[in-house]
Length: 102
Image 1: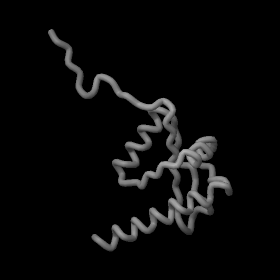
Image 2: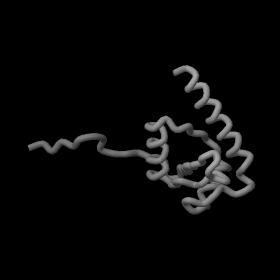
Image 3: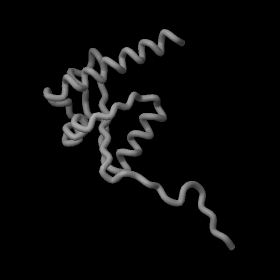
Image 4: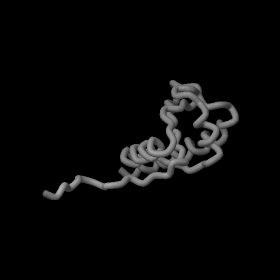
């Protein structure tokens, strides 16, 4: 009898891939906080979860390298503020535009 598997037989991922998820609530948080981080397969899963939930994804190697060194639930360091502020401004504009079209 043939043994068939459901789904892919092999999952391919980049072992060096990094991902960091940030959370920030205006008026509540003083600074964005590292909500999740991972390398390799975990990074891929973070990215897929973000895509599935329509969370904006930005590629910034220098920033992710800095942020992946932080512990979960840690506010971002001062040297990351400018880059993260640029990302947040983009996200807020995109969200505002999406609300207007609905």
